[in-house]
Length: 280
Image 1: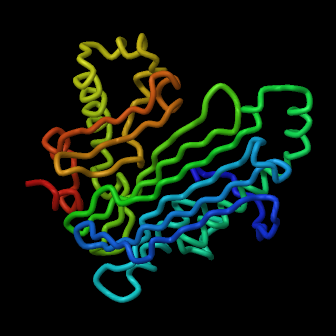
Image 2: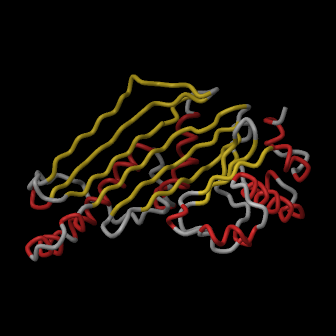
Image 3: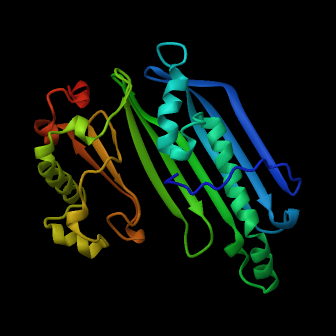
């Protein structure tokens, strides 16, 4: 995920950790035409089974697609999204809940493998926070209109050190043909340079900057790296690209969201681009 490095799957039967798992199976919400079920999965493992000691905490909050037009469409959506969200190793076991539980087990197993080392650190009076692990994942629908479903994964991970890491990833499915929407489906290939120029221009405008080089003083690495990627979602106004920490700027700069209005990039779109359904 982000591709989280999931290890081998272990069934967690030990009484050394506390586990809380809740599925709100009666809670369903509809975003335009796709119905989702809210599911929460939480597990905690404390070193040596001692709740006073540091722990590994893993939490998933998931909007599980359960219904669209026909029976089985929810499963079909999960099968399309699971390899994208969890990694190719989950392609054969492609339901959100089971994949999330395996991800939880993987994190707990990795923490347990380091348990002797963590116990040694605690005995040497090192800072206990270095032994704390915490993972929070949110899988949710961020946009669903005109048969376009934008689904997002938000991650927050901490495994010791000066700070944790957070990232957002987005995937769009065209429900009219069950195809993942990528840049090649939206823009003419020969127009990507102009799209990149519009992206940079919108960033400068949002930050009230006149020259691209001004970005270098604010923690950005290189203005040439600010280009359209596959990490985007739609809004009613345009396309929003997301750049996670360290992708185009230093950690202190934070996550960068650049929303480019349709009117700025419509002329670069393919005639058959699915995005045209959103443009009024």
